[in-house]
Image (cartoon, rainbow, N blue to C red; front, side):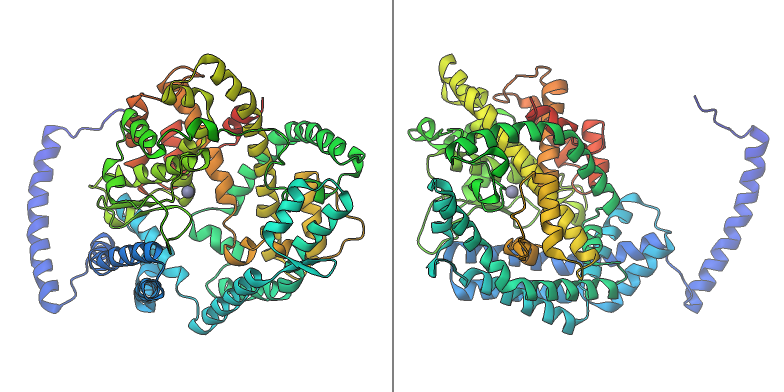
Length: 574
Ligand SMILES: [Zn+2]
């Protein structure tokens, strides 16, 4: 208990008298200052005024841009895309204003802002402006080069014995072919694009580093993370924990998998090579464990299932679905996304629904993003009325998306028999374990490679890549291979230093799941279906907090711990 020092009666009296004369002096001084024009506003007042004016400018533009992008994704028309990118440019122009940035920088460096909410908005604004302070000419070169790489990548066709092949043909061979020589040829064809674009990608990396150095960072990787309020040491620690905790289990699981693959391809287990793993980067599970759940969904309506489920957990999504565009149409974007148009409840989902497991997962996933946006607290300032981080909204989406293959969930939602549930559980448990572990180890390759790449783009990158693949994925390096296989992963060029967020999202999804089953439902094996407490918990602890707290602070408040890999491991390593 802390003692409070209350002033005694005489002290109060004295103070009262003293204060009176002080305030008289103050009034005179203030009047003088106002007259002479030296009136200085406090940092809080100055910042608050800046924010008001800034929000007034950007709020309608963000809304307009949201609507234009939505229109473009639905129509596929060139002019709609143009309108959206014009609006984006308009917004970027606001954030590139160097005078505004100088003001924010000064106020941030002085560190005198007292109100924590203002301070958080300052962080957001500062990062938003900083990103746009890069010299316009340099920025232009970066955009041009990355556009060129993207185009070269998408038009490139690898070849097998002189015959051009498409990406789909390569994947088909890697899925079905049993002859190792043919598999090898297909895998090599998948890497040829790397050889075609590697020089440009290295050049792009150097330009990005140049830009980052100009705004005060060690390199581009450090800058990207820092702009996303992530500290390299902090992410290293989480990835280090994930590495340690998954090392032995992954080795065991991979041993089991290698045994199956070796038998299938008539090879010795020690001779298995990268082309034996179905996916060219071994980022997905080889198709050796059957899991076809489409049969359960084909006579159901996935939209109705999602609506019923979210209503049941106290997070109705009817208002989102009413504004959404859910079915296939000519010219429409074939993928799926969720967008918050105005931070005031206009949230929409784009899907191309079919009644199968993949689209069940997708609508659960996108609606997860949707409820995070929909159940924000309208009293939170506009700039902070958004998820704490891109990966925290990804986590909510993933946590709900995982349910489409969850035996308990499927049973409760579709009234399956105990036998059916048991049958699903048998394969889906194993499948989820493989899928998650394989992905986690692959994400380690990407995170650590990009970190090293930007730290020193002059090093032997071809060797670095295979060092990483061997270390994290336990995949053999083909003898004497000296090719830029890393450049064949287009994310390195087009979505730089972002990949780790997918892994962080999976970790948080498991951490939240653990919290829900242990503290909210108080039953490990409980299904989420019909539990309104889940919605209550998420609203109060995750959604309504918006970006008021930095992501790790929000996670600590919501789960009692900062982000950790241990619940992911507990969920998927059996
Ligand atoms: Zn998502």
